[in-house]
Image (cartoon, rainbow over all chains, first blue to last red; front, side, top):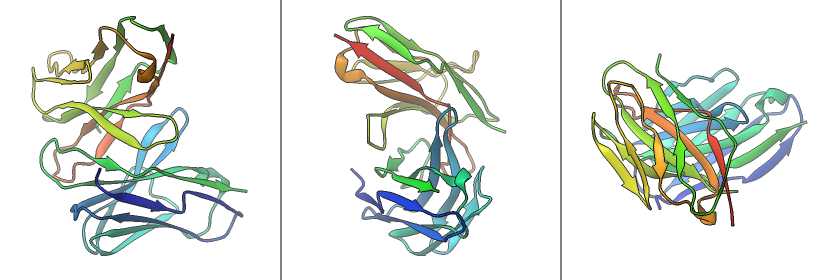
Length: 113
Length: 113
């Protein structure tokens, strides 16, 4: 268990409001990721980080931003939430290296009404 | 770009039946291949992996062989149990050094007693 904590675990918010999801890890892993899980799509990468203040876009980054000011924390922000961002969000970490295992948090269920 | 196609299911089996979940991939180079499992209400966890052609990953009675000639990584288990009921995801990681994962859409397995 890589000690990944996501907060909050559940959130309901209104369209147009900003939302920030937090991922905290205790394993000092270099890489951190945010994925969203939707029926019929599996998991899709939103953004990832390869070090403090080093981030890059994933497959579905529109409408999302991220920040990593400390190794252990990776924040995902929806600047103005839309109903299409209703989803389950998973944070993951990886120490790095070919074929290394990714460790996942328990997920955050976000509903935008 | 890289992609993963897997049998979507749902799959319903009786206890002790044989399981196969097909997975094929498209990628440049030599990606690492994974099967992750998601139990209800939880995040994903690694089931098994293979990092080069002809490698066989195995864990908890599950097996998958990295077949480069057919670009496949099919998951098999000889005798499933009720406790194997879960969603199974095939995935590959790119070789850019970030270990980003590309997932298939997932296959829901239900095993009945």
